[in-house]
Structure formats: structure tokens, C-alpha cells
Amino acid sequence: MKKKEPVLDYLINMGNGYLLTAEALSHGISRPTIAEYVKKNHLEKLAKGIYFSPDAWPDDLYFLYLQNRRIIFSHETALYLHGFMEREPIRTYVTVKAGYNATHLREKGICVYQTKSELYGLGASSILTGYGNKVPVYDKERTICDLIKVKEKTDIQIFQTAMKEYMSSEDKNIPNLMLYASKLKMEDKVRLYTEVML
Image (cartoon, rainbow, N blue to C red; front, side):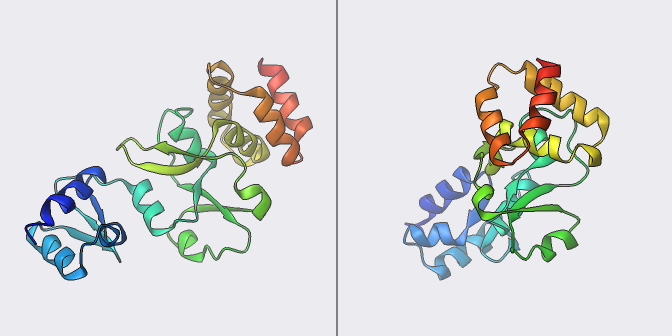
């Protein structure tokens, strides 16, 4: 156990307080050693194979991702992660491939969008949460396309703020935005809003 402790300490440090059984096993640490370490350090079991240090800050988005590796944060949650929303959205928004059984997510109050397999990876990226954990998210351009697509369901203040923030951002990529719009079959809608705001 003592020989393996520095490795486990390193893993929990790099994981910002999270220890994943699968990751520890991949470093050649046995399950009994992991169990002993968890007990000795009073780690909390959050879910199967996911432990959390009592000294760390809980990160709900990262935890949700660890439990559901097929989600990509989207819509208002992506806006928030990109800094296009002033406050964290009341609900968490994710996108999954069509056909994925998302009942367990909806039961938790998560807003789930489904998309065709060929569009699922369009604009997929990653970003650090406010707690420094890497999670999958749609890039700014895909997020803006998704926002325009569901404009009628979105609070007007959220929509306007996000569009203004995107259009004034130095790293906006209009050619990519229009490429995504073309693939999502919404070029006219996206062109209308971008021409007004530019």
C-alpha cells in the first residue's frame, strides 16, 4: 500500500479531488489497495468507481460527465461554460446521439437534446469547468447554431446576451459558424442573425 500511495495521491491531486477506479487500475494498482486507500483517506463514494476527497470542491458538471461519458454539454450550459451567460442556468443541458436511452438523465431534471450520429460530433470540443475539470462541450459556433435553432424556447434576455457576447468575442469564427449552419440545414436563420449583429 505505501509504495502505491504516492501514485494515488498524484491521481487524486490531478483529478481535483476525484479518484477514478479505472484510472487507478490502469496504473497497476489493485482493487484491494484502492479500497484501503479510500478507507484510510475517508473518500466518499459518489458512484461505482468514482470517489471524492472530503477536502475538494464538488463539481456537478464533471461528476455528471463521469457518470455519462456519452453526453456533450450544450445549449445554455455550453453558453455558461463559454462565458456567454452571467449566471449558471437553472437546468443542465446536454446533447446525446439519437437512440441513446436518456431516461435516467431526464429523471434528474436534465434537459436532453438528441441529434443524428453524423451531427453529434460537429463542433465537439472540451473546456475546463470553474473547478478546473475538463468536460466535453460544443464549441462556440455550434452552441450559437443550437441557440438560434431553439430561439422560441429560450429566454429573450439569455438569447440577446449570448449573441452580443459571441459577436463581440475576438475568437469568433464566422466561416465555421456558417459551415455548421449549412450542415445543420439552418443557413438562412443563422445568416439573418449574424448580418443584423455584425
